[in-house]
Image 1: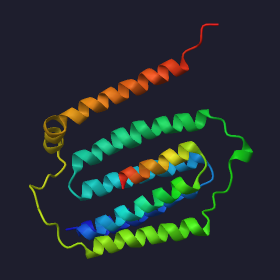
Image 2 (image 1 turned 45 degrees about the vertical axis):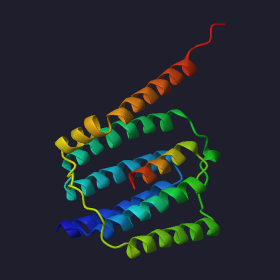
Image 3 (image 1 turned 90 degrees about the horizontal axis):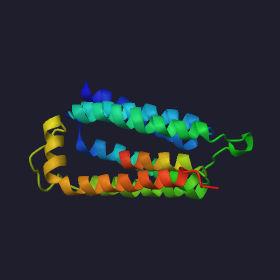
Image 4 (image 1 turned 180 degrees about the vertical axis):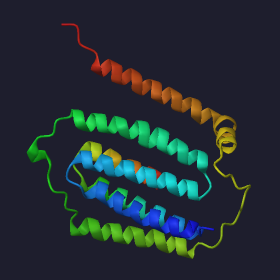
Length: 41
Length: 161
């Protein structure tokens, strides 16, 4: 099936992208969207 | 076939998440996030959690993101508020270091130590977990939502002049 490691790598990449978004963006709504990306990861 | 689809969905999902973070217009960010949630529902379906995939599309992409779009379109942003987001070198380096750290932890972890009964994410499993295992957090969550609603209504109420 789908290897568990690859799922975890995808989740880690999404988490880091969301984290980078929170640190970078100034608009509060977009920051909330980045929190949603992290939660989905 | 599942593996190929997983790689396609995963790579486009990462690109869309990057577009959410880097796009200039918050409406575009919301649109990219809706597309990312659809793709994530596809990944849920590939992993066998069909009920979760359907609920993700209906609730997350279909209700929560729609409300996000309402708010984003109602706050009229002036042209000078749309700045060009540029992650500095420190932020990018920090992100690479964080991802490397997590990837190292994933690579060094062996197979999972304890394999409980595999829950597939079907309606029966989600219902059993929600109403039997996690019943008390469900009730606490409903209280939290009630507090949020009362707060929103009291904030939006017209003050008697």
